[in-house]
Length: 243
Image 1 (tube, one colour):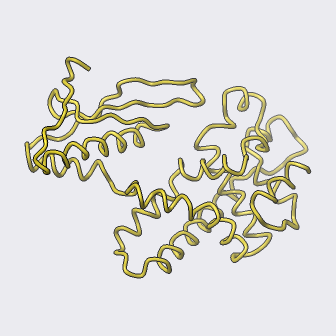
Image 2 (cartoon, helix red, strand yellow; image 1 turned 90 degrees about the vertical axis):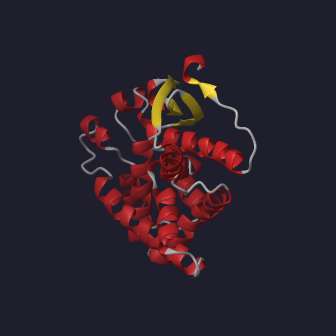
Image 3 (cartoon, one colour; image 1 turned 180 degrees about the vertical axis):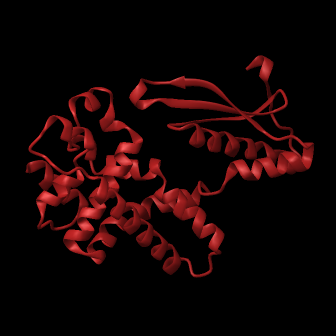
């Protein structure tokens, strides 16, 4: 119960149905080892996913009246992707209160991005059922707003891979290749390091919890070289052979 009260405080909401919040924190693996518990958080995850999408889309629409649909879509995608929602879960210290089976816990399930993303969605689904949309909106936006600022300032919502591919094909008629340079960290917290190459030249590298995230980071670094080239400055390449 103390864990639920702490989460309630971090969310900034008043909870009336603690059993529902407890269900939101219950991974399906927990049911296999606790026969008295009969419901996991998957249905709440389904609901929370839709609620978060609505809140984020409405906020972007209302806050940026001049923003084009394409950019709003990119921002929404950056805000509701698994890595972002998992980070929200970590900000709320959900890993410490998540109920998982012993085997899942031992294999790093409490820190798994997909699990944390799903649990955050389930928690928001529970808050929505318990307290309504406006309370849920306040709780979600408390997390979304500072992250949105970071995304916009860093242009992190831009599809760097698409931008770099368009440029590379126009300039050299070459499609960039993304190569895994290394995989670091334990199994439950792996970090991928990818290089993006045009022929044998390495144009950038990036890190991320998924290959997709690392590839975007590598493409973003490559676009910095593009900026140098278009500014008339010499880029600094690294050959594949010397990588």
